[in-house]
Length: 573
Image (cartoon, rainbow, N blue to C red):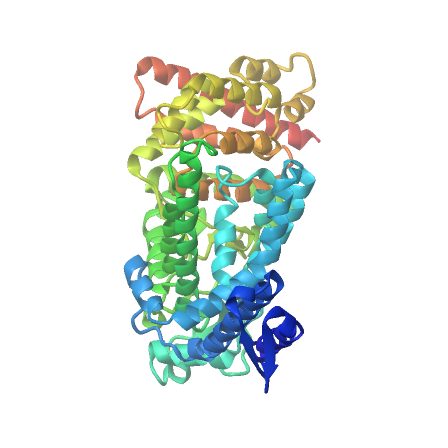
């Protein structure tokens, strides 16, 4: 239809010029004299050719949606393999162009508005930044699971996006409508056997409704037939490997184009030279996405926490067991835990369990060197016995062992407001290149610390602990400005300097933000630095000499005494 309309319009335009323009219409056909073709006629020809080309493209790719539905996973890798993914989708160009047209049609208006704002200088305004960031969040939700996950990852990258964008992307929620249980049963039968639904589970049929649904899968509360144990049965959405791999394929192509464009702008002097990492970032995202699609991997993560974390927490944390007989790549069966999200518990429960959460997270980070990277409100539960429970282990990350020591050092230097040493820690951790302009950066960092009073200096801590100059509680309130209160200044610095946040550290930041967000619900004066410092100091004592140990010990004791003072002040309120 589009092709017919375009050609008809071209014919009418050509015929309207008559013989005076060297054109005549005979029986619906036009004879064109090239040497007398006028500019309007040339434009008409170009318009008609473009319309014809678009019509051909629409007709050619129109069957792509049905073709996508009939594709199977055969030929797609089970782990993130760039070459295999590219070979698979290169054999299905219609599907690729169909999906690309979906993305472009959805994203083009947003990109045009953002480009106009940038050209007019409007993006220097936080109001406009927030407005476009909200539109970006809605766009990512509309584009589907891969883009939702990408937005969640970008929400932890202050080195890539300004603060208003980070704030909006942190609101991303991957709760989506459930898919039909009939399709879930088909996946269970495909993964576990034709009779698996009837032989292995009780309370599961086409009328069963999921208790939770997210972008990658949904969960049912059922019982195992052989033992009667209540379990959480997670089933992956149909066709996820195809949908996610196709979007990753297109995103990586886009990443390459961005890197080429930025390299050209660097050579022209428009952009300052810096390391390109767009494709590396997308590859990291791709590996994480593929791991989240492998429920066998999630089960292994869960068992590692059971074996390595639970024993050193001495019963203060609980992790549900995995039932491997009914677990596969697309189906995961775990122990059902009765409880409620920590964030929705009474304030006294939150106050009691947040220190447990901080200790649990720090032990993951500094001892196990393997941590739960997605501790949002729904993944931290409190069971009927009042024990903190961790669930959903699809997204976990390894921490290089040398970096665990460096992070402990960095926390000690942060608490001591030793900005020069803290800067050296960021270089050692790979946040900054060794040749960064340290003098200017030190001035900016020092200004943030001095103006925000994020961390009080030891002598100020001592004065406050002794009640000098003001009441204890007022002093605590005055002194404790949380990380989120100065995140704008810090993120502006990350954005202006050549910071490159390591992949695992971006996940650490996300976890800390979640923990502090839950903590302040129960205790508005909660200070995650004060809570973490004594533990980090104990870890650091393994690395320093006697003089350093004495200094750290005194600072740790001061932090501990200060924490006790806060507790007493709260009890007296």
